[in-house]
Image 1 (tube, rainbow, N blue to C red):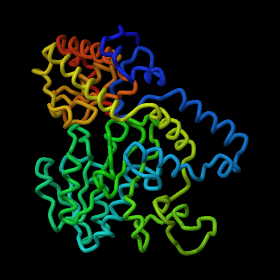
Image 2: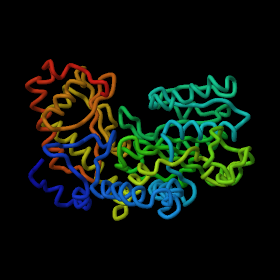
Image 3: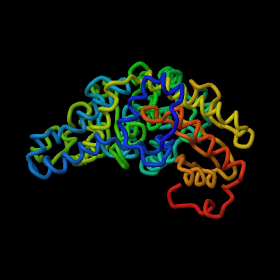
Image 4: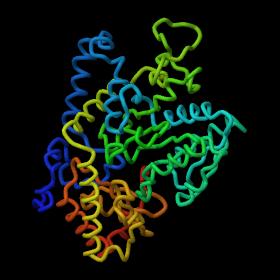
Length: 412
């Protein structure tokens, strides 16, 4: 979709990155916090893996093209973007499976405690994983939920693990990780952090914040494609101190000698023990190529533009008088939010569908929130201005009341 060059876009140090992505025709895309756009370079890299690595070199590619090491090499690329040294991040499985692994590891390390403390508005699947462990382990695991506002004060000497998502998936609120981690350490608790809405969108430093374990996905701000493998970080102090396997998902590629085919499991040293089954090579190749798009930019510049885009969106909404009819539930202070804004309206789902019909893709989160995600590598200020103008017309004319926008799809 062609839009006029905005003065702020002319000053944007990341403006050149937009050309690295495939922007669908007649589309303004503000859903990168759910699924990032595809880059042609990723498409080409996957095609190469299909045609030449799998097609021509077939099984020899495990060694010839380094397929077997992709979880670690890709993991280290992610590690550089979240402040982790080499050898402490791995790319594999899904966020939920990785969360299961690190929660089990944390409970094992803090074996004299059983409480996992989290927030009532944490991403539901994170809570579901704890509930599953709770049912499995019984008294060895007890989930306690508190509000985000009271979390710091609720961490105590009974807490084994503090489980948080740094950026709230609904509101976009960014939790104070440094303070949470500091309080957890004071009380002898471990921290497990979900970085799904942080990694690739804002500066993250797991070492400086003394995070024990972290997980996250690659299909949002890392733009690696739908269902792309997740990542898992484990602090070196835990990898070095292990006396037994850190988690119960014993898999052959997490074995110290996978091709010895021994009957009994012995965990590999370091982060590799968090592997389970055979790596999904084609998906990992996509992650690998997508991460290359971060090679010539800084997370500081990405964060600066993210704040700029979201602040300008609020400015445009205010100019059109939209904040009175659909108030923003995200923090007013930019540093206290991630790379998204959320707005409350009883017809939020229908408003989202009406926006999509006008070529502006955002998303909806229950019960009544319109979510706008900002991906600084490809979103522009001109897009913000155009999208809000279209939203203003939709709200003024109440197009969202049209019958076609009231029917809910399976994926909302």
